[in-house]
Amino acid sequence: MTALEVRGLCKAFGGLRVTTGVDLKVEPGERRLLIGPNGAGKTTLFNLITGELAPDSGAVTLFGRDITFLPCRSRAHLGLARTYQIITLFSHDTILHNVMLALLGVSPLRFNPLIALRRATQLTAQGHDALARVGLGHIAERPLAQTSYGERRRVEIAMALAQNPKVLLLDEPFAGLSIDERQDVRKLLAAIPRDVTIVMIEHDMDVALDLADRITLLHFGAVIVEGSRAEVVADPRTREVYLGE
Amino acid sequence: MKTIVTGRRVAVALALLALIALPYAVKETYYVNVASQILFYAIFALGISVLVGYAGLVSLGHAGLFGVASYVVAYLLAAGYGHTVAILAALAVGLVVTAGFAALALRASGISFIMITLALGEILWGLAYRWISITNGDNGINVTARPSPFGLSLESARGFYVATLVVFLFAIAATAIFVRSPFGASLCGTRDQPRRMNALGYHVWLIRFWAFMFSGLLTALAGILFVYYNKFISPQALALTASAEGLLMVISGGAGSLLGPVVGAALVVIVKNVVSAYVVRWNFMLGAIFVAIVILMPEGLVPGVARLARAAWRAGRPTKAAAAAEPAS
Image (cartoon, rainbow over all chains, first blue to last red; front, side):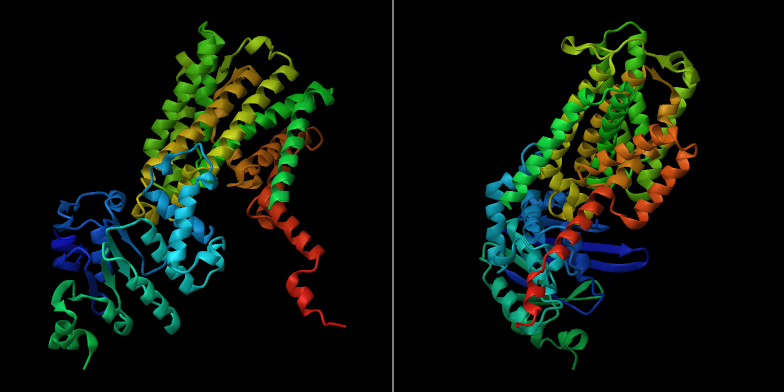
C-alpha cells in the first residue's frame, strides 16, 4: 500500500495558482526529496498534506485512507508529523517541555486537568528519549530562549519524532545550519528507521542527495521531473530550472 | 531545589494561618468585610486570569457572567426557593450562559474575541436593566437572608468571611492544579502557538472551550458570594466598568501567575474601600497606580516583584563569572 498519495492537488491564493495538479506517490519506508526553486509550491504542498491549508481540488490519502477533508489535528493522530522551515516553537518553555507538548498532542492525557504534568513520568521519560535521539539529552531543562538555532532545528525534529509518526514531512531541516551541524543532522536523519516514511524539502543537495531514494522536482506548482536520484540529477530539465548550467 | 520547595510550603502554610486568623485578630467588622470582598473578587479575578493569562484570550464580558449567577440567586430567593436550590441553579445557569458565551466568542481570537465578549456582556447588562418583570430593572432585587451551611450563620461578618475563605481556597487550589496539569500545558500551548498545536494533534477550540467553562465556574462562584455579601443585586454589577475592573485586577497583579489576580483584587478593593475614605478622588489614585504598574512592571505586580527580588538576590552575592573575573591576589 502507498504510504502517502496525492492526486491532482490544486490550490490558488486568489489569482495566484500555487499548486496546479500535483500527483505524488510515496511508498512505505521511502525517502523522498522534494526540490524546486523558491516559490515552486513545496511548503504549500506540505501544508495541503498536513491539512493546515485546504485544497481547492484533488485528494490526499495516507495508507489508503482519504484524509483530504480530515482536520489537521486528526492527521497527527493518524501518524503524520512535520517540521517547519520557519521554526515555530514554544519559546517561553524548556526544550523538554516543547517535546512534551508534542507527546501530549497524541496522548489522551492532554485533556487531563487533575494530575500534575511533572508527575506524568512515562511521558517525561519519552521526552528525554526523544531528546537523546537528537543529541540534546544533556540540555533538556534549558529554556528554549537560551538555545542556538542549530539546537532549535533539532528540537523541531525531536518533536516530530516523539510523535512516533508513520509519515514524516521535513521542511528544510538543514536551513541555516553550520557545516558541522549539517553533518550531525544528516546522521540523525539517516538513523531514522525505515518504518518511518520521509518526505523532505531541501535545497542543500550535498547533504540531502544521499539521503534520498527518489527525487521530485516541482516548478510553478507542478511536478516537472520525478525519478531515482541519478535520473533526476541527469535530467536536462533539472539543470534548466533548478541546478543551473 | 528541595529547599525552595519546602520554603514555598512554609510560605503557603503561613499565608493560610494568617487568612484563618484574620477575623479573630482584626476586631473591626469593617476590615473583616473588606477582607471578604478581597477574597470573592480574587475568585472573580482568578476566573478572568484563566482566560487572559493562560489561554491568551482577553474577556471584557465577565461581569455579565458574574451578574447572571448573582441574579439567579436573588430571583430564586425572592421567589421563595431555598438557598441550596438558588446556589445550585446559579452555578448551573452560570455554566450554561458561559457555554453560550464561549461558543460565540471562540469563533474569533484577539481583538475580535474582546469585542464579542464585550457585546455579550452588554447584552446581559441590557437584560438586567430592561427585563423588569424578572430583574426589577434599575431597582434591583433584595436578598433578605444569608444561608447557614452546617450550622454556621453567615449573617455575621466573621461567618461570611470564613465561608468566603473556604470557597476562595477551593478556587485557588483548583486553579493551581489546573494550570500545572497536562490540560494547563495544552492551554498555554494554544496561547503561544495555536497553529502549531493544531498540527501537533490538539483540538484548539475544545481546549479553549473547557478553559472558558472553568473560568465561568469561578466567575459564578464569585457572583454568588457577591450577591450574598451585598444582599442586593442591580444592573450596575454587570456594567462594562465591572468587567474592566476585573480585567485590571488581573493585569495589575500579573496575568498568568497564581497570586497575581489575588494581589490585584486586594489592590483594587483596598483603594476603593479604604483609601477612598481619606482621598476623595480615589478613582484618580487607582488610575495613577495602574499607570505606575504598567510603566514599572508591565508583567504585573507579582511577577515584577519576583523579578526585582531575584535581581537583588543576584546582586547581593558575587556570581561565578564575577568571582572568576576577580584578579587573583
